[in-house]
Amino acid sequence: MMIQSRCKFKLKRIRNALNRIIYSCLTYSTLIIGLFLISHRNVSAFEPDFVFPLENVTVAQGRDAVFTCVVNNLGGYRVSGSGSETGTPARVRISFVAWIKADAKAILAIHEHVITNNGRLSVTHNDYNTWTLNIRNVKMEDRGQYMCQVNTDPMKMQTAFLEVVIPPDIIYEETSGDMMVPEGGSAKLVCKSRGFPKPKITWKREDGREIIARNGPHGKTKSLNVEGEVLSLTKITRSEMGAYLCIASNGVPPSVSKRMKLQVHFHPLIQVPNQLVGAPLLTDVTLICNVEASPKAINYWQRENGEMIITNDRYLMTETENSMYAVQMTLVVRKLQKSDMGGYKCISKNSIGDAEGTIRLYEMELSKKKTNRYNNYDDISGANDEDNEAIRSEDQNDDSLFGTNGRLYKGLQGGDTNLINKASTCHVVILISISSTSFSFIISKILSNVL
Image 1 (cartoon, rainbow, N blue to C red):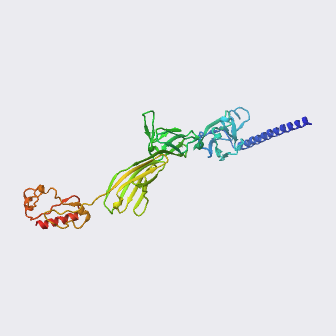
Image 2 (image 1 turned 90 degrees about the vertical axis):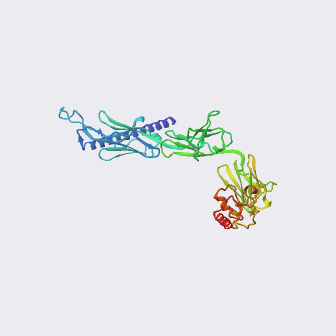
Image 3 (image 1 turned 30 degrees about the horizontal axis):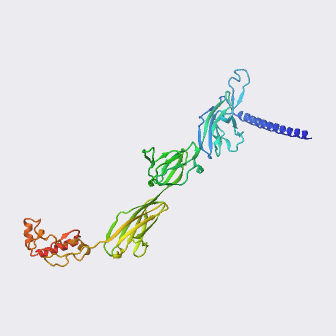
């Protein structure tokens, strides 16, 4: 029973195979008969011939590709040497177009019938002389040599190549992410990609600054672009901190990129532009400290006795970021008082260390107006505090500037002394910095006394 069952199973498989062969033969025969009937509608004395060469096609994966084959005199044609000239009946040869994938030696289509089992292929004909092979949603397996063939004797054919290209893509699982290194350390950034043709990798800094490559103990090169899958950085400084871009391109748009952030860690560093600051009482004064730190630091101000300063109606503290690691600390002391004089500390702390800077604040006294000892004269500056500050009486070197009667003589010659001699008394001032209004007022006062 078991042997009989096996025999029946084998016979069934053979029967199915024979049925497929018979079906294929019938289909092919039907195709040939159909082509024969079509060709006999219009029998030509000329053999079929190609009008234009078959052109190579380049297409991105996922797009559609089209090959166009233009053939004249396709159909039935009389075979050369037949007919009345030889005394034999004229023979008519049937010609048709076939599409073949040459490298795989696979027939794709004959006439308008697709032979291969590929639903993405189709053949169209414009009922004249143009035949097209359409490949939808092209895949990499479609790449290769394609042939447009006409079954003349000998056969005529044209070939063209289908190039399938793939836009670049970053292989994220094999590519570096954000990285953190200590200052003076090294970092290796890796960028892997796929695509066809093989993508080229280019490195750039996001901020447009140069990439520093140190080759050997003393060699150092700077460039805006570095090529290669691996970017090696050695003896890293804080200025190299920032975002780096890995760009993959192969001529097939679009190019793609990945952003990698390089964080360089170091302990805080404080620079104080002015360590000694003076200001008059009841004015506002600004103290400044410049801080560099990574990771981000906690910054604050203290008095020299350790008292923490907080923002209130007397103190205003601000921070301005100048870069990824640089911050400017500012302390504004409002309406300066005697008790505000002394030392101030700007302090910065992060996970690596801390630093501090000291600024000493002192009172700057405004210069007071002096009257010269030869004549008690009231305020000549127009009651302007700023101008009063700029006007000083010079009475320390009176002997060198004045005679016994208070006349100015040093540095004056000729007619100048005659003008001075007309005055019974003369008020002398030295102008350090004065506005034009006050200057005019002073001159008018002097001239009124002189004249």
